[in-house]
Length: 244
Image (cartoon, rainbow, N blue to C red):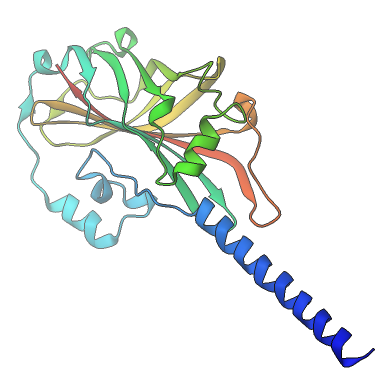
């Protein structure tokens, strides 16, 4: 092999290496997380010591005095989802967890703390409002490859069971409960249960809850690639502020 040929081979190899690195950098940027999840419950981190809160936060929660009793009439009745509410969903890649947020949430909640069997809730998000901080990625997941926004502009949730809610509430207290219902995405229904928390604060009913579904539940393809792998689980998180 002469010197000229060897130089061409070295140059070609350099182009492949540099191109591969550039492709990896592009893919990392495409899949990187740009959204931080914000809870509607300011005391949630302190009350969730079993899900990663620090010992210091848990101790602070224990020393916080209980609020005044909330009248049943203040809790019962129809509530509307306020425009400060958000729904998040998250997927884990081989590098990190990527979050998506949707701030166009609507719906109503009917509350009856004395008889949870009479409680119900319904909500919807507008698929066009899904935002991960990456326009190219967002347009892709709204396309026919994933959510088929042109045919299914909304995803919905209907709640029909509420287990563990107390009959007596105090201002600012956070209560754990389990909420069951149905998620509907792309016209496909999936029964789910949310590990949820609720609190009455400042005349608002605050609701936070998480559940897990999979891509297959709604006929979606796992967006893994040769560069990054993606887990099949999708975490769905409700962060709702309700107003009368």
